Image 1 (cartoon, helix red, strand yellow):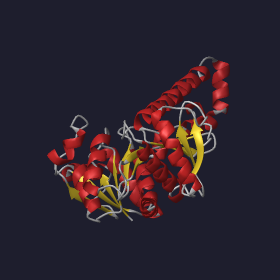
Image 2 (cartoon, helix red, strand yellow):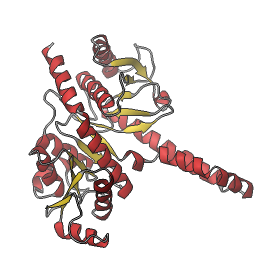
Image 3 (cartoon, helix red, strand yellow):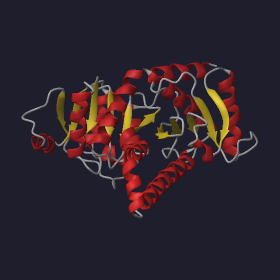
Image 4 (tube, rainbow, N blue to C red):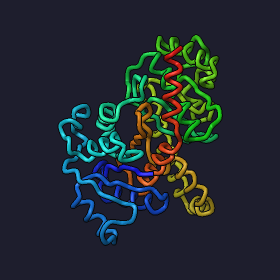
Length: 338
């Protein structure tokens, strides 16, 4: 398994990216291709005590870097020798099994769509993060790649999300919910009302396990495994959950340090509190898969440290080895034929 890494993307690049990648090479047994400015990558390796190239690690030089303020839709063309563009071309040409970047989300989405290409039949690629729930995890698709969607896009999101949860998360029949302002079939705007029968049809054909409309308040209760929505609604849902989680953790911290009695209780609960924090930590998930792209592409968080990037590489290796892209490709082909 060979994972191509954008060594220059993200707030903490290249040091934390290189550090996380080296750990992945050691612990996951994957080959790593670091793409970026060779002199800076070499300096990072030396700072980490590496003499020469570490085992299972290679470097491909790329002189340019796509910055966060570059125009996303044009960045990969204007900077053809950027670490992101070079890495995506390596993936396209079969010189790796997956690509991971903590760089600009917009540039990565545009580059992956136009360089690596979408799965045949897929109209829109989507951002699909996994979030912790009361019973496990839930995928939200889409969370911002497609602000405006047609019912047919959400129909494909359901197929993509179901394919990921089956292939990567090993679920037999992941429950697909449609994000709405009520659980009744008659709820929602035009998009939701027109999408519902499309998902119901897929359910009747045995292609997905559609469980109906899902309200935002129930998502974290684990009522479904995949939440299908347009990118605008999905992004609001995601940011609301992230903000609420941060708010709750800050309140807990204030309570635990309020007085001596609470501090003593905090010591007794320290292990459980850290476990709770890890559950809500983006570092443990690692990244967000770009679903609908013909080869595995994972977007790591822009502020990824070494641990977060290690987990993003781990996620990419699991996606690459799952066969889910091939499965979804065949399923979409069968749907088109009908």
